Length: 145
Image 1 (cartoon, one colour):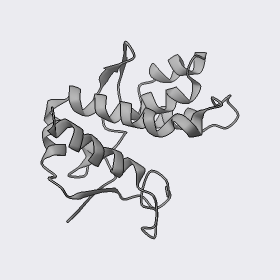
Image 2 (tube, rainbow, N blue to C red; image 1 turned 30 degrees about the horizontal axis):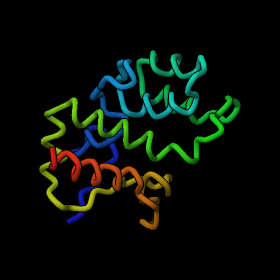
Image 3 (cartoon, rainbow, N blue to C red; image 1 turned 90 degrees about the vertical axis):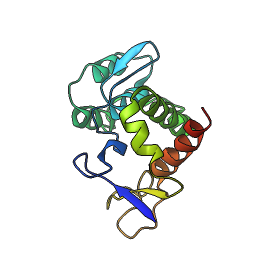
């Protein structure tokens, strides 16, 4: 069985990086995993803290996706590990959604998005689904705790 998610209001909406399940990471509080992820594009700059303090993951995404800003040079090499770190923190520090993640058993988890072929499955399903993959990896790690 495939478990798909996208909107925060969906059954598995807590899997979305936009869900408001905050966590502490790097000695700071983050309201969403999207906020953490987008801020790390500018690690060590003023933009990192500016994004952390925003009250909306959408606003964080808008700034993070702005290519007029100085994206860290190693971003392509570190982005998957940064997402892993955020997802792990989110699901280990929020027990109610940890239960939801574990309830998926061994099912495949897919971010059902039409416009993202890297983090999601893309419109035609041929995308890499890296967020879904990281969620499944996190589920496996949490099972061992």
